Image 1 (cartoon, rainbow, N blue to C red):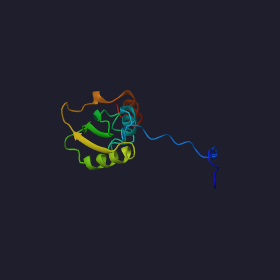
Image 2: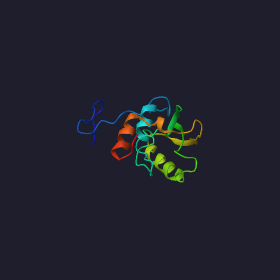
Image 3: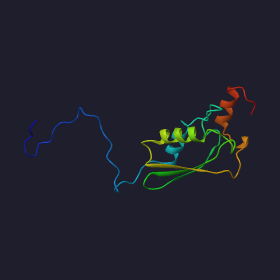
Image 4: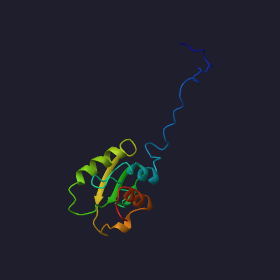
Length: 129
């Protein structure tokens, strides 16, 4: 297709694509988006996501879209660290540039950290919380 000088081709039939963020690689991803994506990471033992279980203590996001998650497990002896690490990387793939999990044990996790949504999910599974 040739266009005459000064003529703009008609692309009205093409989908709109958002422009790349200005600033040479800075991100527009938000902490809320990272937290929401982490709801796809499910504790294999309980079947509840790590956010609503209260296992994600903090999210650190830098301007280049690298994220460090301060996370804990229900027990320091939990054998499922690798499973949760793999799920985390999959959940955040394409959203952030790099993921690091900083496993923390203080303060220790307890049922008080479970969100109201998490409590509803646990009750639906028959837990008394």
